[in-house]
Length: 116
Image (cartoon, rainbow, N blue to C red; front, side):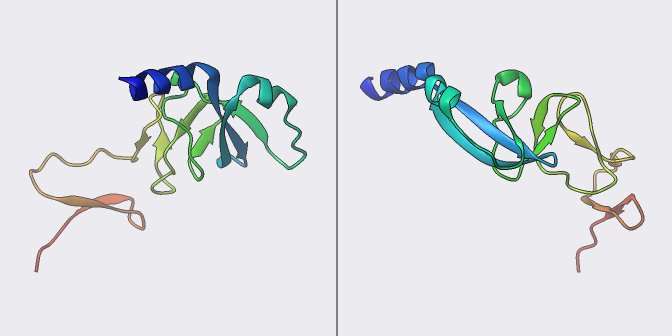
């Protein structure tokens, strides 16, 4: 019980901030807001507060979409686009053929996994 209460109290006073540069999160800190207000950081990039509205908790290497104001997992393939829910979508939906498929970026299509 004490651990759960301590965890709850910790979350009340601590806030997660992520530093983004070139649409990629490069640093994440978990600090009190009062500390963050005094933080001096002259390195390239900008800091964002992690909020539930930003879809996922930020982590180093995740994607930051400035226009949608969300964090997302890294883009799996260059041709995939980020939807409004913060999920990457391929140019064509995966076939519902009851088989295991994989995305082939060179042909920009789904291929069936062939077992030997």
